[in-house]
Amino acid sequence: MTATLPNRPLNVAVLGASGAVGQELLLLLEERQFPVGELKLLASARSAGQPQTWNGRHLVVEEVTAEAFQGVDLVLASAGGSVSRLWREAITSAGALMVDNSSAFRMEPDVPLVVPEVNPQAAHAHQGVIANPNCTTILLTLALAPLAAKRALRRVLVSTYQSASGAGARAMDELKDLSRVVLDGGVPNSEVLPYSLAFNLFLHNSPLQDNSYCEEEMKMVNETRKIMDLPDLRFSATCVRVPVLRAHSEAVNIEFEQPFPVDEARQLLAAAPGVELIEDQAVNRFPMPTDVTGRDPVAIGRIRQDISDPNALELWLCGDQIRKGAALNAVQIAELLIQN
Image (cartoon, rainbow, N blue to C red; front, side, top):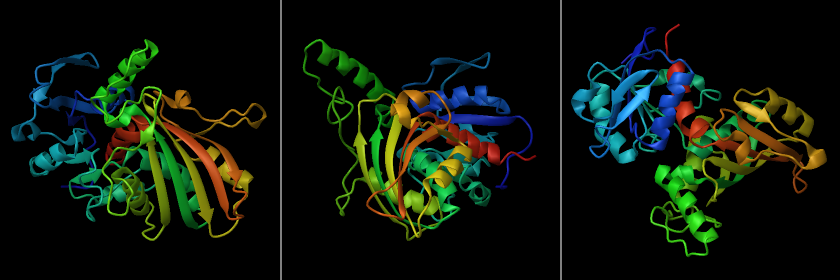
């Protein structure tokens, strides 16, 4: 397996093509004019046979098999951890690069965990698999990296407000359906999520760990440390599901080793790749999920001095979970590795 992708139209397979992130991957491959030669849409037997139009081509979703990866250069996988683990060997044995959106391989020492604006060099050390970080981690590191490059981080505290899309297309549909039920005076009964998100919120439903943090919170802790190469970074997160369709928000408190002037931080973030500043203090206007839905940038605002700590800043951010939080980041990773 070479560290780069050939500079020619690539044979690409999208694993999990029928899901919300898979559909966004297809949209982005077309929008960004990614050099696609042959394109394979792979999914479970349940989705096989579905017709799909992509960039003027008429395609059919295929059931994934080991033979399907023969002749493929790049596999963009977004079908869940168990599926990724099942097909990893077939993909890498076929000589394809696997950019995986699940949590299956993120913490393996030999698997790069990459946010292209933050640690692009890590992608070139792959051994056939590159992991796409968790959505909340991707959004957060875009804010942390330009600041950490100027002053050392001491501690990060995050509260997330995570949209239904993080649980997939069915959860998004359920939020819409159950919202109608509530508006009609009915009682919402959730089948996809453990509780109804309609006019409601609840602490993230991923399994609790022995330390009483949930799996989603520990993903943020461990992945941020790995991406930023700060294994001892003090970090704590609280993750919440909220009734928003597809954009995550985060309230972030960042403690540095020394004071960080707000104006300097604002200038750095305004110039940072992948970031958009939305701040109008006169009218109390800061980022909202509707600002970023369907868009690439992570919106950051309400950058302020922490009044309890002279070395700490606070900020608020929003980013599209399906786009930059998943599909866009994966496509950008592949773009890093195309030979120039």
